[in-house]
Every structure is written in structure tokens, then in C-alpha cells.
Length: 56
Image (cartoon, rainbow, N blue to C red; front, side, top):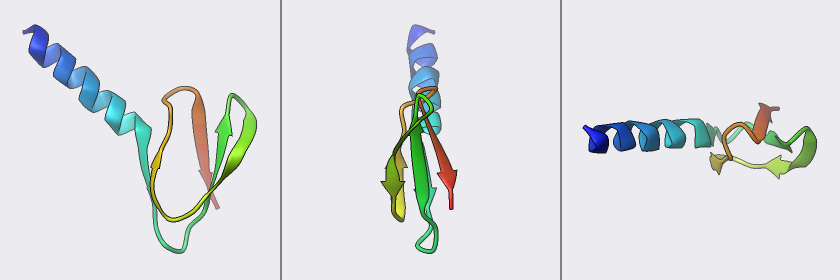
């Protein structure tokens, strides 16, 4: 039972952490409300509840 709970927590963490930008999209990452930088196309890793990404 504990293994299942840990597995669900890991899957949820990964689900909240990864974002995918298409080749025609760009993203701006905000960390704690401040601009963290621009990101290009591909897989983007975000820290849940700390980082926020806005697609441009």
C-alpha cells in the first residue's frame, strides 16, 4: 500500500513538473513572481508551486 502511495506521489510530481512547448511556441518562466527567463521549444522542467510558465 505504501508503495502505491509513493508511486502516485511521484507520478503527480512529474505531471506538475514537465511542460512541452511546440516548435512555434516560446515560454517565459516566472519563479516566485520574478522573471526567470525565456524557454524555447522542447520539454521544460518546472518546480511545482514555485515556477509558473506563460506561453507566448
